[in-house]
Length: 158
Image 1 (cartoon, rainbow, N blue to C red):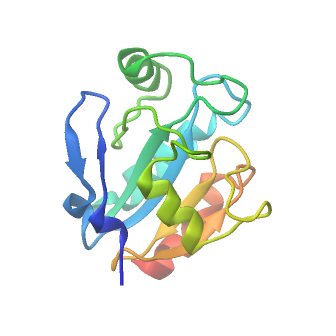
Image 2 (cartoon, one colour):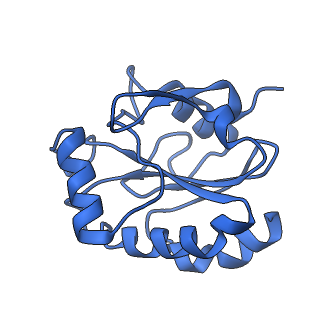
Image 3 (cartoon, rainbow, N blue to C red):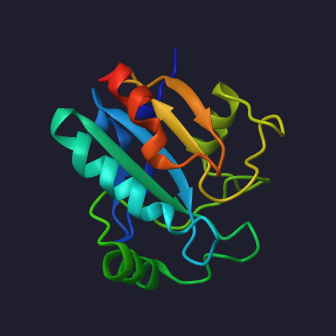
């Protein structure tokens, strides 16, 4: 059976990162944007990352510009924004597409594993996928779900 460990993605620095690097960790995978009403969720994402990372948890951020053009910057701009505005230290990846014909393969997998309100389509920025230590999608959460509200779900998987 496939898992997220079979995929890779480019970091903001342009390096190809095999998700196998995160094997055995509980993950929260999020499509992000810098100019969205949900952008302040970076603060909550960073807080839960810092709280749970010593126990084998990571947040993986995937910038996406498909929703209202709310992630217009390049990798350097995104990295600088995340670091300066929200002190983001969790892994951030290069901009991807999460819907349509150029959907990143990881997101095709995530959407097929857990449908949302609009079926397999990602509704908006900051859709969250919680992945267990075996690399299986355990839950999908709407953009409106605040990261801090996921503490119990994360705890249960750690």
